[in-house]
Length: 73
Image (cartoon, rainbow, N blue to C red; front, top):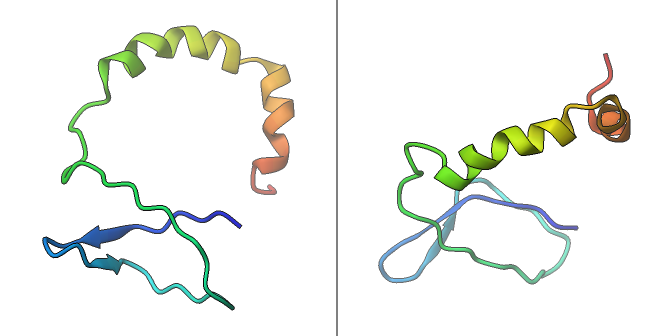
């Protein structure tokens, strides 16, 4: 099971989870340190690649391939 949980690391290096986590046993975890504030705008590379990716993603075949992940209507 892989699950992402938001946390804050203080100056002492202590990790505080922002939500309760209940696990049946001890698990390994990865910690990725992010910028202190999210970027105000998306990175330029994301904006430049959007049109090229949209041409591939916005196809009926892609919708069908990912349909099982959509909530039931």
